Image (tube, rainbow, N blue to C red; front, top):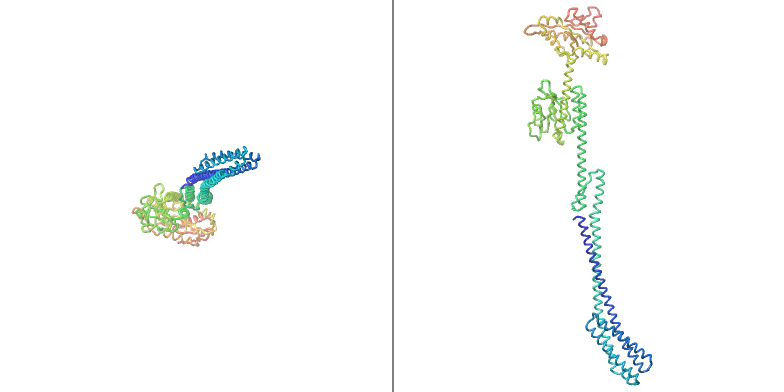
Amino acid sequence: MRIRTITNWAYGITVILTALSAAAFIMSSRSAEDERRAVEEHLALDTLTEQLETGAEVSSDEARLYVMRGEQRHLDAFKAETESERQRETAAKQIAARDISVVERNILADIDRQAEALNAVEAAAVDTFQKGDRQAAQQVLFGPEHERLQTALLESAGYLRDITATRTGAALDDARRRSDQWSFVAKVMLAMTGLLFLAVLYFILRRRVAVPLVRMTGIVTRLARQDYAVEVPDDRRRDEIGEMNEAIQIFRENGLERERLDAERRADQHTKDLILQMMHRLQACENQQELAGVVARFAPQIFPGIAGSLYILNEDKSALAQAGTWLEPVNAQTAFPANACWGLRRGRPHMSGAGDGDVPCQHVEGSGVAASCLPLTAQGDMIGLLYLEERHGQTPVLDNARLYLELIAENVGLAVANLQFREKLTELAIRDPLTALFNRRFLDDTLHRSGRDNGQEPLACLMIDIDHFKRFNDQFGHDAGDMVMQHVGQVLRSTVAGFGSAFRFGGEEFTVLLPDCSERDGFEFAEKVRAQIGGAALSHSGQIIGAVSVSIGVATSPAGGTVDTLVSRADAALLDAKATGRNKTVLASSLSRPPQETLHA
């Protein structure tokens, strides 16, 4: 029940009890008034009766003294008493006119007759005395008739006293009893009013208002400090306190929801910040290895519950090779065919693994983990694959994070495509398109960096020239000459790989740089190259071209000079090789020695 209803009822009951108490007090007052009237009536009747008795005796005594002594003062006293007796008789008649019993009224009437008769006898005796007959007067006043009348009057007065005393005593007792009863009722009503007031104070103000308010004050204070961990007791009362408690509970739930939303917003903003940081780093990467490292570093920070790998498609788009991995994914294979992934087949993100009804990819089939394959595309071309899987024991996040994952995949794809495009442009800028060897410009840059950064470290330079190259063009055509160039370039690439770098210097001349290589090692390497080039018989369009020979000049730095003069010294040795018969290797250091010190094949 609502507190307002309870207080209204308590107020109404209090008013009723107060009214009843007031009525009881009024009735008690009236009963007290009846009691007072009964007492007054008893006193009046008792006093009148006593006066009648005393008056009759006094009147008789004064009359007797007068007839015996003949003194005037006794006559005056007799007359005065007679007048007083008449007044008392008048008072008795007035009392008889009140609401008294019939018996009392009859007794009063008898007293009135007896008093008149007694007065008449005494008046006659006084008159007889005044006429001079003293003896007769004395006989009358002291005679039996006078005695009888006086005795009857006294008996009637006594009887009236007894009757009135009995009646007024009963009326007095009845009035006192009613007064006590109404007084008791009034006191009970007052006590009930007081108890009701105390009950309202205790049960309403204290238990239903004060105590809950004190408890809720502490809760509201903690909620005001945004301490939403405070527990709000479940108060199912349907009153104002219950509504207040429900409002506080709603406020707490709203606060918790707001904290949850704020936490989600902060987490979402943190994720966006990390993604933005990763994008900035991706844009600054110089090669795919750096890019894979950036993805492997930021992916676990963005999504701690997701493991994964980054795969890059090879040039013919037939297979994927792992470029980077993080958090140890279960199905992180080093490489697998491109057709093993439904995501690459369809060109769209594909979910596989536990709890998914879609067709699983072959490279994750039977793994028992939820996985997602996100193709990396750029300008409609497939670049690679971002493979992601949920870690065991972690909350599923792949589906909820799909938007961000696709955004990451899109940016990673663009970054990989940009790097590949940059690498292609770089290759075009530093490589010779015919032989696929580095070009003259890249040779100059390499020598400049080496002289600047590693000028004191050993470096060997081989200058190579194809012997009689013009005859291939003149005899077999320029296509045959290009084939000879490609053959020499292929031999240089395969031989130099892992040891140094090969360059096309210009025309039919080539350059090889061998770091950490001495003059003797450089000579042996040059002889190996010359033997491999000359060891193959070439043909073009069904025509036998024959063997190809080369002349080589070898120079070293810093033992033979600075890096800046390395190419010129090797070129001088090459010219010497060509001048002394071709198909040989000449050391630049031998040019300053006697001819017999020149090393020949």
